[in-house]
Amino acid sequence: MFTIKQPSTILFGKYSSRDFNFPEHCLIITSKGAKSRGWLEYLKLKNYHIFEDVEPNPSIETTEKIISEFKNSNFSHIVGLGGGSSLDVAKFVAYKMKKYKILIPTTFGTGSEVTRISVLKVNGRKKSFHHDLLLSDIAIIDSKFIYETPEQIQKNAFIDACAQSTEAFDSKNSNQYTKFLCEKAFGYLEAGILNGDKEKIVLGSLLTGLGFGNSSTTLGHALSYVFSNDNYSHGHALAFTTSIAHKFNNSIFYKRFFNIVKKLGFEKISLKQNLEEAAELILTDKKHLDNNPRYVTKKDLIYLLELIKDGKSFG
Image (tube, rainbow, N blue to C red; front, side, top):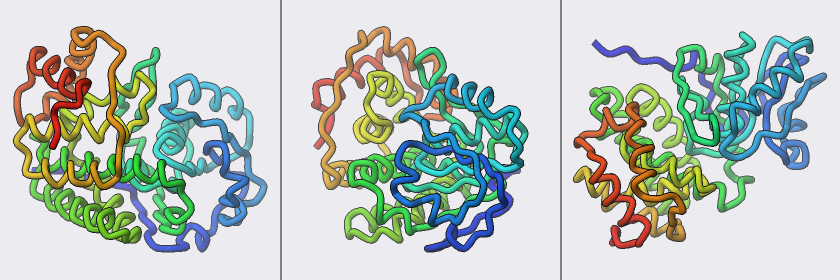
């Protein structure tokens, strides 16, 4: 028996967030630029509180700062608005403060708006928190935002979605339902990226979140976090770590995935950390490695990191 978990309400379609009737006195959690881009005016929000200092690859200290700053404020809803970083912070804060969650992605790749996962840095290292109460109460997927997102942010988001859908398809934790969603998701993402159809990318991103959120990502994500710790964006790291993971796992998606990496034009990545130390750290990531379709040893990890570092693993 399989259990599928997703938000109680998903609103999908262009202008869906504009047409939603938001309650007054919400706490908006977002990053710099939300006001200047006109997002808050577009949402017709009234009498709101706002925290707009969510950083890329956010830390748990950011969530603690928000809770401390707004613990005596009068609000019942938290609205997460932005990319995966803003949504992950909003989910975690709402969970801790026991508030109603409305999540609106402005980039389309993390799937955070429909998953029970929040990724935060703890002691400088990324950690995934999993809990049913991290699921949004309402997820609003408005494709209007994709047309206003800077190209570099789009690239990182798109490859993130591709990594999640394909890793989750291959995961030991997958089932017929998640495989169906992930395969469909990657098909939409691939067509959208290669043909410039952004509406397909938005749909592919949503299906990815629903698919991998009920399965798991695997080796590609486990490898990526040591590069994120070196301040590469999550998507940039995944472009290469998921490519090499797919090759290692003999995934049916390897060639198609790497074709997208080449289409998006990612620069190679390198690693400052000692490879043996990095491999030891990756081995602690049981949530990803235990669900990888192929058993992974420390020797394997060092070899894969060396290939990524030297740029010899692709083509």
